[in-house]
Structure formats: C-alpha cells, structure tokens
Length: 438
Image (cartoon, rainbow, N blue to C red; front, side, top):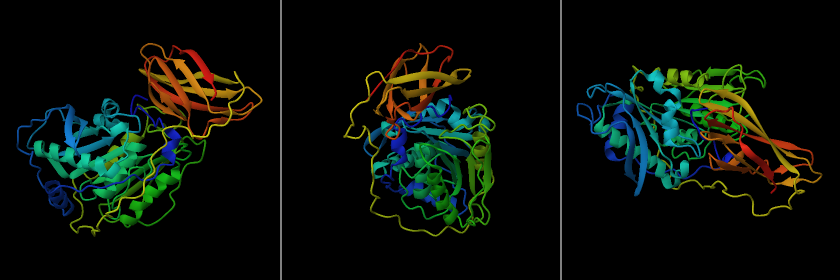
C-alpha cells in the first residue's frame, strides 16, 4: 500500500480513544465567506484574480502559537481567474502529510484532471488529538492562507481521511458545517472531537465489517450523526457478509436536498484500500477512490440550498478527553518460559514498489506469554508504511514491534499475528527475526 502509508502505530489504543477537545472559531473573514457559500452565493476568495505567491510543495504556517506545516498541490496550468475545488486530506496516526501527498491524496489527484487544489496538513505527533481545538485552528489558518492567495470555489470545500484522519474529517464536519460542502470518513471514530455536530453536511462513511482497530459500530455512530442532521430516513443499510469479499454502498433516502448521506461497508479489516474479490488491500485496485471522487464531484455545479440550516451555539466546555496510552499497562504479569516465543515472517502480497507481510507470533511453551516483542532487520530499500495489531519502533533497518494492548497475552500453544505493508522490493526477507517475552 503506497497510499495512506502508516496505520495506527498505537492500533488498539485508538479503539478506546474518546473525543479530544475541539474548539476555536473561524475568523471573521473565513466565517463570512463560509456563510455566503451556505446561503447559495458563490463568494470569490481574495486570491481570485491575483498572481499567486504560493506554490506547490511543503509550506509552513504559524497556527495557535506553533509552527505547523502542510503540503500544497496547485493544479497544473493554474488559472487565477478560475475558482477551484479545495480538498483537505488528513493523514492517519503515525502517518504524515508526505504519505498523503505522495499517494495522490487518497487517490483523488489522478482523478481530478487539474480541477482541484489539494492540501495535506501535518498533525502534531503524527496525529489529530485536536487538543483545545488546535487542529481546527490549523484547518482555519491554512484555509485562510490559501484563499487569500489562490482562487477557491467556496461552495466546493471538502475533507477526507482514513482512521485518525477520518476522525479529523468528522471533527471538521461537526465544527465547520458552513465551510465544508462534504466529507468522507474512512474507518473513522470520534477521536478528534465533535464541537457542534448539529448542522447538516454531506457525508460519506466507509468502514470494514470486521475492523479490528476501530469497530464498525464507531463508524456507524459517526454516520448516524449526519443521518439525523441531514434529515435522512433512518435505516439499517445492508452490509456484506464475512467472506464475500465485496462492498455494498447505500445512499440514504429522505435527506434534505443537497445534503446526501452515503455509507459503504466492505468485507475487510482496518484498511483504506479494500479490493473486491481479494483479501489483500491494494491502492491501484481499490474502489474507494472512484466512489469518493464521484461523491465529491456530484456537487460540481451546485451550491447548498438557499435556506441556511438552523444554527446552534457549540458547547463552550470541551468534552472530557482520554489520551491514548503510550505504554503497556503498569502492572506486568510474570513472563512466559524463556525461548517459548517465536516469530514467523510471511510475505502475503507484492506489487511494484511495495509488499504486504504477516508475522505470526506463537507461544510454544506450556505457560502463558504476557507481552511480546518481535525484532527484525529489513533489507536495504525496504520501509514499513503501515502496521496493524502491534506498535512499531522504527520503519527501516532494525525494527521492533511490540504487542498492542489487546493481543499481548498468548496462551500455551497459541498464536497471534500482526501485519504491515512496506515500500521496496518484497522478494528479500528480513534478517534476524526474533521474539522475546515480555
């Protein structure tokens, strides 16, 4: 998976995250432009007609008293008098803006035909905790900087992301409903907060039916927020069965005009790149990019309804937050038998420039393993891009992977697995594969 290339390093921790504080408000200029968009008036941004000073590449910006960064992609042949669609692509936990940009912004860049300005913000600590609304402030500040310099169609702002990036997209939908036209949340949960969350936004949710990191029930909950907000008819969309290797996309009925809700459930785990007919994720073959692009592009010639949605004041007190644990529990049971832990490395799938691996951690002893760590040395040119069911230290060369907090206990003669995707040539197996406990 060259795209969206670093799954949750704290995989299981994310499953129990509660919403982080979301706050901050749009400044007057961005807020006024957003309201004009919601009321059906195409407000030209200040950048329209100006010779741009921004260029494609990594940009730095001061936001909330901190130096932050983002990657900007301006269409080839940029026309300063033409309003462009604007799409924010948020990375996943332990991913990066560079991962999103290098993979074509969740595969949308090659579909855009130079119609879209793309942005990939960089999260603090490679995540979107949105503490005290700092990441919403970053969204506001980047939007303002871009729109003051480039020509943006204010009725065509979008956000999407996978996992933690999906959580941040949901937070944007909740807190900035008069700014974003639609969002797509892939395998998300309420991890970045939902300040507001009472106004309609066009919404597309995508989730695996047996997601082992963020259970599909979490994705359904996010979806149902906008089923209610958008006035859709409540229903239980049909979802594929385990082993079918298919996906089912449902468009809700009864939604307010201009505010559709769409839901796609697929037979798979926590991945942004499911493939029908295959259990192996693959960026070049996934159906997600095409469906997301169709969902966003349906708004190409429309503005939201002329009747503004009802407003409500966001809560002034942020929700109680629970930070993801960064270390195993303090109490550590006695270790298992010396030498009982073994690790078996297996290449599951390969493609040009990348490969997928499964590692089986087995307990060959008669007593329970209470925690495990696998160490291996990747071949030259190989680098882990996403990893699940474990927490890795390092991505190239000498790498260690310890258990997540839910799969550290392995009974006698039992086993568990973790997996990862990596860039490079998968034909060469790593050296020095070993397992220790705890």
